[in-house]
Length: 222
Ligand code: C5P
Image (cartoon, rainbow, N blue to C red):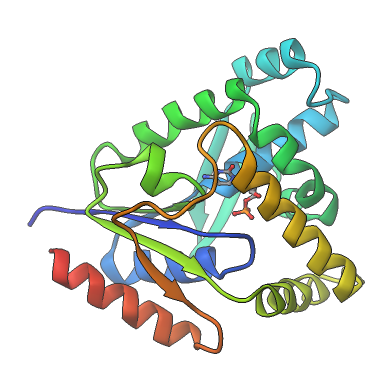
């Protein structure tokens, strides 16, 4: 039976990666976390003290950068040139800087090529900001996942607390809103709902309920 492409976009903390991973597992599809790829670029740039204004430096960095997304016991492992950066790309410092690098044309072009290659056989659930609009505009299933800013900030706060980061909720709310603003206002492939995407507001919904909703939409398209 033909395998479909599922695109899930939305703002920070809407629950995309949690939900996309479960949907992928249930469909026996590959999950591709494109945010992790932009985070990996940011990690490498910061490590090499390469600012987002140094376009030449970022371009060179991309040329020698191998990003791999692999699953070990159901957990996504992200490696940059063989180094495991899974935890390092989730720090507040990376979250604060990622949108500055993600708006650069060279970065977006390099990620676009890799993401399309990863999806070209179908059978993928890809999440991000521009999947339904730019990366995979022909995806059979397009979801735009969102939730109130209070709920999204609260989820991120609990997630960070669980990882041992002591973050101020008010500051985190501000940072998330700022990241959404930058992601929505950039020139290339901004965060927005594709005209043919279905809006799913996860405010007050359980993860199971969101997964069920997406699987129902998937079955309708199949
Ligand atoms: O999904 P996550 O919050 O990990 O994404 C981190 C950042 O990567 C986003 O805030 C955005 O700047 C960038 N991103 C993007 N396009 C995507 C996925 C992520 O610009 N498709």
